[in-house]
Image (cartoon, rainbow, N blue to C red; front, side):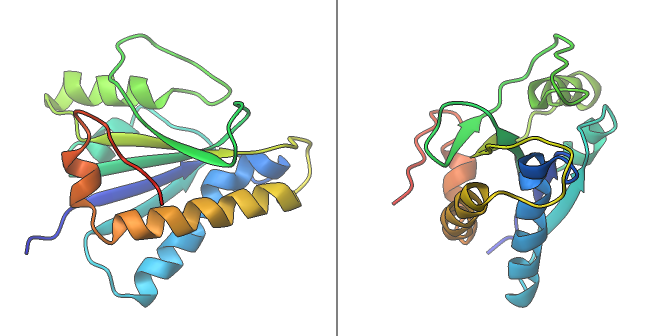
Amino acid sequence: MSVYKILIYGYGNPGRQDDGLGNAFVELLEDWANKRKLEGFEFDSNYQLNIEDAAAIADKDLVIFVDASTEKIESFILTPVDASTKVAFTTHAASPGYIIGLCKKLYNRIPPTYLLHIKGYEWDFKEGLTKKAKQNLEESLKAMKEKLLNPSELINSFEDFDVTFE
């Protein structure tokens, strides 16, 4: 069995309450993967995505970006990321789609890439997640741990995106 090269990349500002969900997710998932001695995983987190991240994803078999969300979702949702050539600036410097588009332009490759949106509620300048955000974090971790034990499903279902959580 070959080992997949998987990057889990969380971003956000832990000093702005629930905006730190992506960073917290990566920290907890990395601890879980290390305890189980899972191979092929790389973890990164930052305040925002940067153009240099196109190089970091170029050789990966699977990329999952993780960010706090203000969208109207229950607790979390996993969505595929399409490449974009448009410089799409959000509350963070560059969007995942822009990083994927840049990867295609520079390295002629688009790895299967998803964005895990975790519902957040408060964004004040204060450290620590809200109680509801912590619950959403735990739910998303539980679901993603199960998926990442068999990453081929995420990799192979990317084109016709049909990933379900049970």
